[in-house]
Each structure stands twice: as structure tokens, then as C-alpha cells.
Amino acid sequence: MLKLFNSLTNKKEVFKPIDNDLVKMYSCGPTVYSYQHIGNMRAYIFMDTLRRTIKYNGYKIKGVMNVTDVGHLTSDEDSGADKVESAAKKENKTPEEIAKFYSDIFFHDLELLNIDIPEYITPATKYIPQMIEFVRGLEKKGYTYRIEDGIYFDVKKFSKYGQLSNKDLNRPGNARIEENSNKHHAFDFALWKFVPDSHIMKWDSPWGIGCPGWHIECSAMSKDILGDKFDIHTGGIDHKTVHHEDEIAQNDALAGHRVVNTWIHNEFLLVDGGKMSKSLGNVYTLADLKQRGFNPLDFKFFCLNTHYSKKINFTFDGLKASAMGYKKLKANLQEHKVGTEKVDSEKIDDYKQKFLDAINDDLNFPLAIGVLWTMLKTEPKSIVVYKTAMQFDKALGLELEVKEEEPFEEIDIIPQNVKDLADARLLARQSKKWEESDRLREKIAELGFNIKDSKNGYELEKI
Ligand code: AMP
Ligand code: ZN
Image 1 (tube, rainbow, N blue to C red):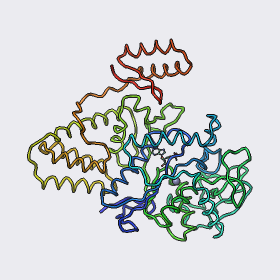
Image 2: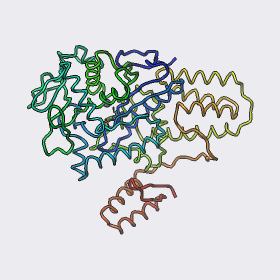
Image 3: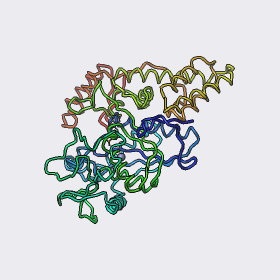
């Protein structure tokens, strides 16, 4: 019996698909104006564990994930510039080039993390007609109004507005109506925004030339593919108060009933105890972790060891401990793979049950990993144990299969001074200072590391 914590009802509930054994699920995806950082990747690792758990329980999945290539402004509300369009101007590329460049890297990262990818990947720019249709539907039902810069959703018309995050229409709190806006209520949000001629991304619509508001894409795409009643919607906790409140308002207002049964939010990954920020220089990507000698699955293992609803504090020491744990796990599996001792099949069944109970208890993966460890450490060395672990890996997605003799080695983490020299060398190369670059290569070699140039800059390995 799978139980999931529903953010909408604030309760752990027994999960039952609407449609027999088919689970319909929507996951908020990336805004492709820049690299997705390791915090973003936690959201997809969470999505992966949920998808795998659903399948482990014998259900099929129809999953959708959007790729936001238009509409997400620099604020999550309705002010600022379009993120993709701004990046295009800054990098002197077209919005399509920007979206493609960052999407490709994103999907490559998902692969490296062995993430089970949703059946439907939907770029927002491919769903503009569906978004327009959706807004027309809301307009016909009287939920919209027009002001000089766009068509807005009138939250006062939707009596349940704020139900997900307990927002009170009479107490807008910090939400303010931006200067020069004639919005009726601070929580009202844009469905369609008029844009100046200089805007690159723009479409014709019944209201005039413009582009969609950010929230409408998820509503229009989920309706198009999953219909107006589906099982699960996921996303990071930052989306709970605005993006998802607004999605619920649009969805339920148009359908006339609750569209999504279960909302699930993953908590944040913090770095050094705080939010990742460019000014602190601590916005890490998967490529950064690789450059420092980590396997992407070390990071996945690191994430799985904390429940998705708890904050994780990322540090390199913590990641190193996880990397060691992951290696030990594999080494242990290797011993079982070649083991010939006898095992008690009842005990193995008991582990299987405990593992299932753990993942079915609102995805308690830390506990499930604990069950795996106990089995590996306490049971006799046997291929039966190994095969049971491989079954568990269908849910864990940690690529635990032992393919060949993998010697257990201490992990060589790239020291900060070597990393600094490698960064300086990259800069030297970018400025075509070849002598300086060679000098730095030698210094790096003196410290015991080999540097190779790569697509993402460089790779370091211990000599
Ligand atoms: P974005 O590209 O900003 O739309 O974010 C993509 C996904 O990552 C969304 O589900 C966010 O809620 C999630 N997310 C963003 N930052 C973090 C973080 N630091 N930790 C966990 N999830 C995050
Ligand atoms: Zn969304």
C-alpha cells in the first residue's frame, strides 16, 4: 500500500490511481535559460524516486514534464524580463539556440543521474495554441480581466484561491502590486502578456500580440496530455506559494472541479547552509562535481540518504562521505555476486517486504537504503542477496549492477588549490595565453594531477 504526503490536504494518504493501474503525473521541469544546478537536480532525483516507486508497485505511468522556453519572468510573478529572451540577448544568440543549448545539457545530466525520464517532454513554445485556448475558456467563464499590459486571472472570483499554501486573499502579506500596474489584487496573475515590438518571442492571440504568462503552460500542457483529472503533480517547494497556487486556480476554475488529486513538493538543497548564489560562488552544477572527481551517482546517493521532504545541506565533505558509502556498497555487492553460501529464503523475503514498506511509506528512501545495507552486511555472501539488491535497485536507480571487477579505492577528491590552478588555466586558454596555460599545466602535474580539456572546460585525474 503506497502512501504519499499530499501538500494540498497536508496529510499522508493512501495512493490510488484514478484510472485503475495507470498513474498520470505531471512534473514541473526546467527553465532553460541557464544551467540547472544541483538544487534543481534534487527535484528531478525526487521525481525519479517517485516514478520508480510507482512502477515498483506494478503501476504504469503516463508522465509529463515541461521545458520552459518562454514565459518565465525574472520574478516568479509578473514583473521583469523573460529569462530565456534576456539570456539570448546577453549571449548574442536566438532564444531557440539558448533553449536548445541548456536543454541538451539538462537531458545529458538526467542521463548521468540515471533518471527515469517522463514519457512526454513538452517545450512551452510548442503549446501556445493550447494555452490560448485555455485562457479563452477562462475568459468565457468570467475569470479574467484585461488591463494595459495583459489579460489577468481574477483571484477573487475563485473562492478557494490560496488553499495549497494557506494564502489569505484579505492578507496579501509581502505580495505587492508593482508600481504602474493596475492589477486588481496583489495575487492576480498574468495569463497573457502584451509585449513590445522589440520582443523576439511573441505570438498573435485574440487579445493582441504577446506571450503566455508562466503558470498557464503547465495547466495547458497537463490538460492536453493528461486530461482534466489526474493523479500527481510534483515540483520544488519554492513553487508551492505562487506557481502551483496559480495552476490550481486556472485548472479548477476551468474544469469546475479539482483537477489534481495529489500535490507533492520536494524540499530545497542548500549549499553551506544557505541558498546557492552567484555572488557567493557556490552555484554548483553536475559538471562541477564531475570536475572535482565525483561520479554523478555519488550525488544521487547523497540525495537519497535524506527524505525528500527535509532540507539537505550540501557540502563537499558530505558528498565525499556519500561517495565513499557508494563505493563500499558496490564493493559489498561484488562479494555477494561471487558468493556461494546458503541463505535463508524467509529472511530474504523479509528484507524484500521491509524495503517495499519503506519506499511505500511516503518514499522513505533513507530507510530503504538502511534495509539494503543490513541485508548486505548480515547475510551470508550469496548471489541470491546480490539479485535481491538488483531488484531493490529498480527503485533506487543507483546503477548498482557490478559489471566487472571494480577494485575498491579511496576516492581522490580534487584539492581546492588544484581546482584554482585549473580554473586559472582555463581562463588563460580562453585568452589564448598558451605559455601561461602550459606553465599552469606543469604546476598541476607537480601537485599530482593530469588535466584534460573537455566540452565543459576541463577534467582532472590523479596521475
Ligand atoms: P526552475 O528551472 O527554476 O523552474 O526549477 C526547476 C525545478 O527545480 C523546480 O521544480 C524547482 O522547484 C526546483 N528547485 C529549484 N531550486 C532548488 C533547490 N535549491 N533545491 C531543490 N529543488 C530546487
Ligand atoms: Zn509548472
